[in-house]
Length: 80
Image 1: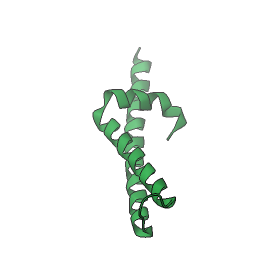
Image 2 (image 1 turned 45 degrees about the horizontal axis):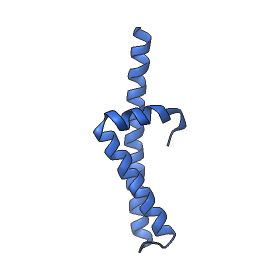
Image 3 (image 1 turned 90 degrees about the vertical axis):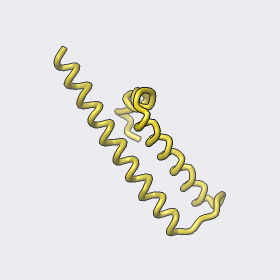
C-alpha cells in the first residue's frame, strides 16, 4: 500500500479491528479482481470495474486512518 506506513499498518491491524477489517476486505477484493481478470473466476467487465471502485474506496479510507494515526504519533513524539 504505502511503504512508509508499513510498520504503522502492522500496528493498526493488530490494534484496530475496523482497520483490520478494511485491510482484509481490500485484500479479498484485490484477489477476486485478479482472479476475474485471469479468468479463474467468472467475470464481466462491469463487475470488475465495480469491485475496483470499491477497492479504491477502501484504500482511500485506510489511507485516511493511517494519516490520522501517523499525525497522532508525531504529536505524541513532539510532546515528549
